Image 1 (tube, rainbow, N blue to C red):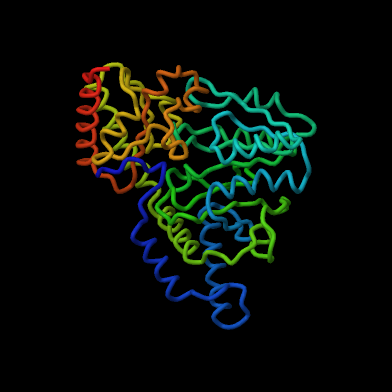
Image 2: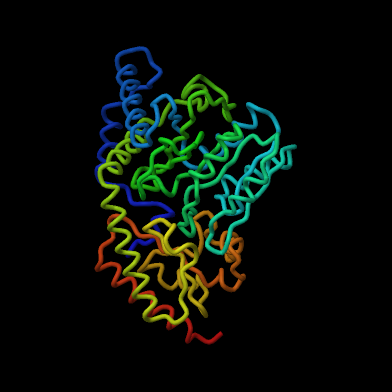
Amino acid sequence: MIYLDNNATTPVDPEVSDAVFSSLRREFGNPSSAHAVGIRAHEFLETCRKTVAGFLGCNAEEIIFTSGGTESNNLAILGTVRRHGKGHIITSSIEHPSVLQVCRHLEKNGSTVTYISTDRNGIIDVEQLKNSIRKETLLISVMHANNETGVIQPIEEIGRIARSHGIAFHCDAAQTIGKIPFTLTDAGIDLLTIAAHKFYGPKGVGALAVRKGLSLGPLLFGAGHERGLRPGTENLPGISGFAKACQIGARDIRLRVSHTTHLTSLLFARLSSALPGIRLNGHSAQRLPNTLNVLIPGMVSYELVDRLKEQVALSSGSACHAGSHAPSPVLRNMGLSGEEALSSVRISAGKDNTLEEIEMAAALIIDAVQKLKKKPS
C-alpha cells in the first residue's frame, strides 16, 4: 500500500510512539494529585505545554489541551458565544464541518452567521469579509489551509482586519501545522486550532491556543483543569506524543516542505503527461506543498478510490465525508460543476513517501483511470 492520504491522518512517527509508551510507563500519575507521583506528572505536563507553545510561538499558559481539532474548533466558537452572548459570526463557505455545523447550530439558537464565498482558486473574498463586519460581530473564523484542496488563505490580512475592528479571530490550522513553517507571532490570530494526528502525532489529542486576555466559556463542566476550559484528567500519553511531534516538526519542517513539494510536482507531471485534460483544483502556488486536488475528466473519483484501495490510498473528498458520493461542497463552492467535483480526487503526500512510491503510484493511477474509462457505462 502506497499511503497518499496524509491530510486525513498521518502515520505516527517512531519517535512519537516511543514518547507515548515512555509516558505510559513512567508518567502514569494524575497531574492533579498532590503526592510525588502526581507532582512529577504535573511537571511533565507543563514541560509538554511549553514544548507545544514554543513550536507555535506563544506562551505556555495560552495552550489548552483538547481531544483534537473538532473539540478545539467547537471550544473556540461556542466558547466565544457562551462568554459574550449571541451575536454575529463571520466564517467561510469551505470550512471543516466542525466549524460549519457549529455555526448552523448557533443560527438555530439566535446567532447570525455570514458565510464568505471563494473564487475559482479557492481563496476567500477578503473584501466581502471586510464588508460583512457589523457592530455586533463577535468572531471571525477562517481556516489556514483547506483540507481538500490545500489552498492557503490570507490569514495575516484577515488578522489585521479583525484586530483593527476589535474582533476575535479564530483560525483552524489543523492542516498546516507541521507541513509549512508557521508561528503565531504577529499573525493576528486570537484562537488557533491544532491536531496532533495531522503531523505524525497520536490521534485523540490537540490544542486550542487562546491569546492571553481572551475569555471563553467552557463546553464541559467539572474540575478546573486547563484553566477551567477543558475539565477532565489530561491525556498525558497523548500529550507526550503531541509534544514530541512538535519537536520533530520544528526540527524537520524545511526538509518536509522541500521533500513533499518535489513529490507532488513529480506526481502531477506524470499524471498530466498521460491523462488528457487533467486539471489542478485550487491555486497553483498558494497551497500546501503536499496536497494535490486534481480533476480527471471522464472519471468518477470514488470508483478510482475503490479500484486502488489495496494499492494506493487516496481520497475522493475529505475524510469527514467518507462514504458519501455527493459532490464535494468545497469544490462546488469554488465554482466546479457537480460532474467536475465528482471527477476530482485528493492526493496528499507525507514525509515518509519516496520517489519510487510516487513513480509507482502514478503508474497505478494512470492504469486504473484508463481501465475505468473503458468500462461499459
